[in-house]
Image 1 (tube, one colour):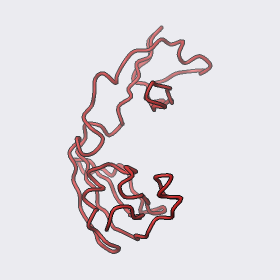
Image 2: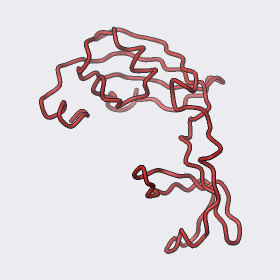
Image 3: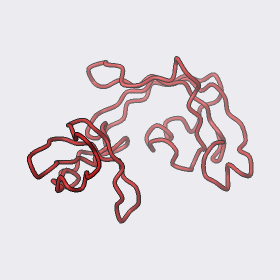
Amino acid sequence: MTESRVVSIHYTLKNDEGEVLDSSREREPLSYLEGAQNIISGLEEALTDKAQGDEAQVSLDPENAYGEVREDLVQPVPSSAFEGVEKVEPGMQFQAETPGGPQIVRVVSVEDETVTIDANHPLAGQRLHFDVEVVDTREPSDEEKEHGHVH
């Protein structure tokens, strides 16, 4: 495949224990625009030379996937930051506004006046294993190129 093509894949994602974490097999294929950082870099790099019908098994260390867990992304915030939410519980996810733009955070723990949040990706720190089938490739539309993602 050449850069700036739309690639559609079916994938199954597993962790080191072989547990299935996600799969596209029961739904539409995942489509991405090459070179636009629509998927994790290590997976995109492994699929660069693949064509329609090709299959690949790709294992990625955290640095080529969602990164290592960063402790600085786990922090306490005042409970008042969740004003309007009836009950804040561990595992809940919220969108936080940060200087770098919107960020998804997970609630780790809840104390009387403090809620500890984690802005790490849920798969950070994990080695990931993908079984991938390239379903289709095509040239992107001008609009897709301009917007940097598949329509």
